[in-house]
Image (tube, rainbow, N blue to C red; front, top):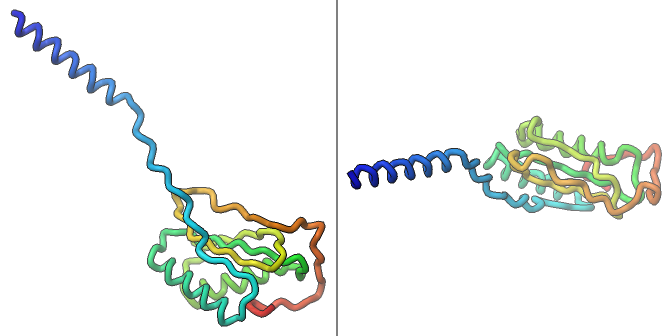
Amino acid sequence: MKKSVRAIVTLCILLLHVTVQAQNPPRPADIIDPPPKFDEWTKLSLADERARLDNLAIHWQRSPRLAVYVVIYAGKKACVGEAWSRWAGVRDWLVRKRRVASDRITWVDGGYREQPTVTIWLWPPELGKPPDAEPSVKPAEVKLVKGCKIYFGRR
């Protein structure tokens, strides 16, 4: 009789343990550190800027699930529409010439810095929110120039 009682108690303890384990929430996924900035530049020749965009396209083609975030900052002295114009040139080169999927590229108007700046991030979708812009010049300190011609890659 003692053996059967012991077996029943052991069985109850095992069942209780299994029930408690089943009620525990799953472990949270390992925290993933945000990736480092892929690239950043200020003033470059058209050829150098396109070479950097080519490098980005090569890396993206190896991991097409990644999102491309392009943050563009106008300079302290800037043309009206400068950030958007630079974005149009970057997008055109990446999508038309380098076949990066347009739905994988997002641009952010980063505001203003001392020099016009382009920053590039390759961002895993599981991280959700993309990197924030980091302007260093307040809009009140910027001199906007109207009517100037903006050429992609030429400053």
